Figure 1 (cartoon, rainbow, N blue to C red):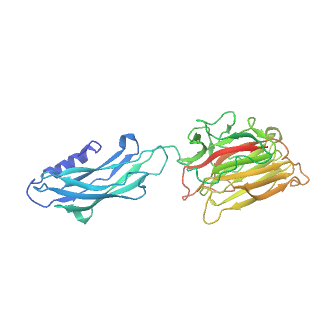
Figure 2 (cartoon, rainbow, N blue to C red):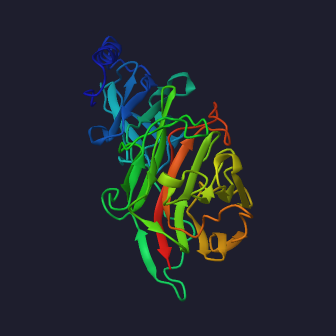
Figure 3 (cartoon, one colour):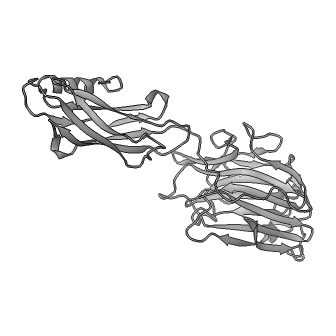
Length: 391
């Protein structure tokens, strides 16, 4: 039996339990699986070793069959499915059932499986049922993302790709993106502190990951912007992304006029390519904001809904605008759902005929989405496969 991972007290108890019995006395032993195992999922713990013992030694060979059943862990993803037979030679009372764990780098909830004794020859399964729980504890940080979902075209008639970020490098490109930082509420009474820490934004497997996390009663996230780096006037813009969900979660893919530092908001103009309120994970919104001054702020927009219980957290979708001197059209997976023309601002300044920069962020809380509650799980993430601009 492999006892090296068991606490000393448990080892002593098992040895005493086995050795103070009258060995080789021909008695029918009880078979016990007495200890649950809880270990981190890492290279040092690729085997979960479950001790199995007989209550008394016997002069006969004892066999015990077992199988592994899932609880929250998944066969073939978290552990290797197994079933087999343990043989106790005459006079022996201790062995182990070894279950192989699949180690990866992806952040997951702790997961569990059961090892169940199903039958025995020359032994009795104690109390008619013996099982032990294996708990796979996870401390990884990389979020696993499937590439399934809608894929945009690689070209459009009469247009050329003038800029893109495919997020294929090992880190966020500083020639494309910088950060907004701080915990100021951002005009919407939001809760998060925006950071440039790698736990809140990083590149992984060809995706930009923006991750909102909860640390005690505090929230952190990231807000990337391309101001002074990548600014464009007009074009077809495609952003492929998976969105987060949950009460109080607020992801956005949007743009502000490059004159924002001098003109201020809303005079600079705002184009929301996509916003989602986490409590309604099946609907997105496209909006423009404008106004000569803050008291004159106005906005207008439209929404698009997924049917059949689908959500924008399930797989990738492509969020787009088609923007020219005549106005702006919003598209989801290449299907238009809302438009404005260049008369939208009425007698106020029309700001959408100037260069704009991009902002990608996940907010927590705020006047529009409300605030997280007991149903909200963390971390939440937005994965961005690419941002492309065609003109």
